[in-house]
Image 1 (cartoon, rainbow, N blue to C red):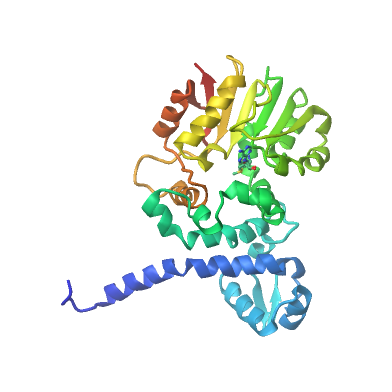
Image 2: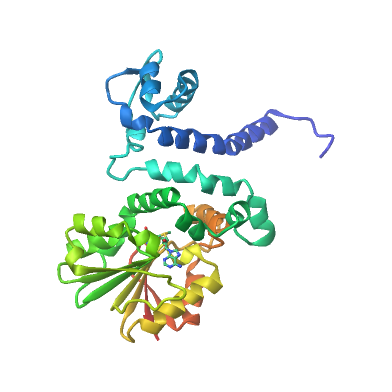
Length: 337
Ligand SMILES: C[S@@+](CC[C@H](N)C(=O)[O-])C[C@H]1O[C@@H](n2cnc3c(N)ncnc32)[C@H](O)[C@@H]1O
């Protein structure tokens, strides 16, 4: 091909690739806006960029350039020269938005972003680039960095709406006690308990994470029906329950580590108990699926993976669980065999 003359099609291909390649700039543009809290100060009344910069302590000429660009993407609107208003997209970044993306934007533009800078390491070794960049595993890092940990927990909790809907649609009849293993700050468990007054709950997560749960479960009005247990799901005995929920847990780990968690669950789960896995299922075919991108993120960040149905079946069978898919959204029920 070296002698081939460039055509307009070649140029189009290059332009398309260029557009894909600059995705990292968009990520940072949104993340910087989220870190500054710009969406919190804008309303439907136009505000001059000098006032915005003053309120968020930013460099005015640079902030203007950032807002001018983001307005072209529908995040903020430049309604008069240098005067901006909110939009639906910018409101999604407000701290008080119902399912705010602010913490997600901060999280994805911080340590997670930097670990992608060394992604080549993951694809040459199969090991998480995060560990290479930060010198420790992701969750160990969070335990040592309360700000990053708080951002992560809030990002997970705000994004849990779909997962919670899956859990709410589950038939909880006849179940007395549910344990959310790796349940973060208890946001999801709080909703499940609030909707099922007959249920008792146990929240299990790392000791540094469950410290935030008291308030969340009290706000949900279920603290009197819920125990909070800090521990490690690899080494500590899990609290007894009829159902163990593992929401977005096993995809954080490679097969060996995921098996170890399942083995620990199998030890304390009653023979007639159930596991509920709130996880994605990657399609076997070549069709586009967000899980195929997120799978890469799992590798780079934590050495984990998104799994196909046959991979889920094999993983569960290895630890004497039988796979059953119970909702179209992919809630997986597994029973001991
Ligand atoms: C991806 S988050 C999922 C949080 C929540 N279940 C959800 O669906 O939003 C993974 C959770 O696993 C917890 N975790 C990580 N390692 C753990 C360990 N060794 N023992 C207990 N929890 C752990 C983290 O603190 C975090 O809350």
